[in-house]
Length: 137
Image 1 (cartoon, rainbow, N blue to C red):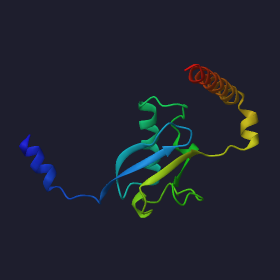
Image 2: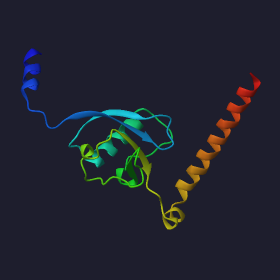
Image 3: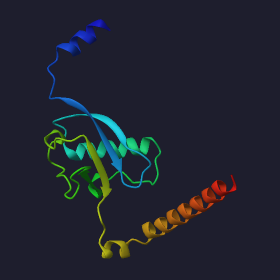
Image 4: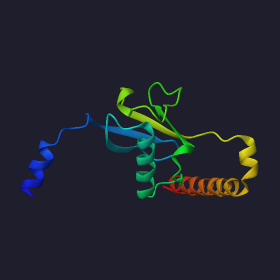
């Protein structure tokens, strides 16, 4: 093991590494992980989606990184380009949002609209059940 440690220690670093926090819109809390400053925004989105799925978070997002945009939490009006380096942004807090769908795409896809309706019903049920529990104490 000591040989492996020395071998890794002597390898040149490929840029600085730092901890980032990505809040997924609609999720309970941020996902945190270490990135290299030279990592592309697209890679950060992909890692976020994989971590989100691995943790079993809701709502289910899917794994297609092309359906999402990453924003800086503080300046947040313009999405980051998937091809820029995450270190060039100069911040460590981000927000991940689904890209808005056009009306034609939503009309053509019947199944996702049903799943959203079901998700809304679940949320309504959850909030009603929680309000009953809270008011009874």
